[in-house]
Length: 366
Image (cartoon, rainbow, N blue to C red; front, side):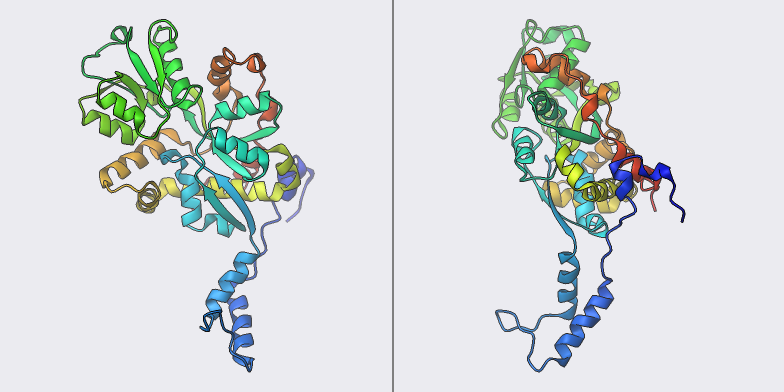
């Protein structure tokens, strides 16, 4: 196949044809089997048990893969990462990926900047805050380009006017739940500083507990929390997902220096991500199994609702990152951080790896 100049338009392009060249399992297995069979001494483990040629072959293949660590927050929007791991898509692309559940906040951002993690899945507010402070984190894709929440309220609240004077719970100031709440209030003509009280409850389970016990009236919620609240006499007042307001969550990012030094690894990761999105959207049964195990859910109805919501309404087929998705983040955080005022996120968005994957049709279900 002829290569023309257009294939070298980016770092990603210069590497895309360098697919991982793994030795076929059968060849490795045969070589190991011959080595074992012909050796006068049995090939033993520390426990003196014979090593299976197939196991040795698999280990040999895995040794050829590139090891990387990727962080993630829990939730249905991040299914493509879990699916790619469990269904062998990362491995097919030459990657030995360790997924680490560091959340989507400052812990993950710090791990990326320290080099402990090579690629992250986190909230856009963390990327903006870090880059405005001097980091050089580039944005590769956005898995959650709309707000994945409904706004749940206690039974006594039936309109936006009845929110005045009430206390609204968020997980943490400046995080995705806080930004979503402030965006919604502004859209509905309410002042987050004057009309309501926003209370951050960072301890695990504290937000739901405060709602159920009547300490606060309202919160943004995803599928699992919504089900819990509605069993306790709450109801939905607004569906933010249906509003299609641009949002930056599930942001896939890496250090620019890492991408420059390892463009082939970043490309193989993006190839895996795009393939996984396409496959998981078309493999409901397999996806439900992955979600149930990853999120440790016993209720099949909640698993199904989580999949249908995120893969049907939130995660796009093509997770293109845009500057508009970060508009709310910059607007809200700049009120508290002068470094973010006037921040331009565009130079930190690099869609070349995604575009490379799309040119090769990896978004098409096969």
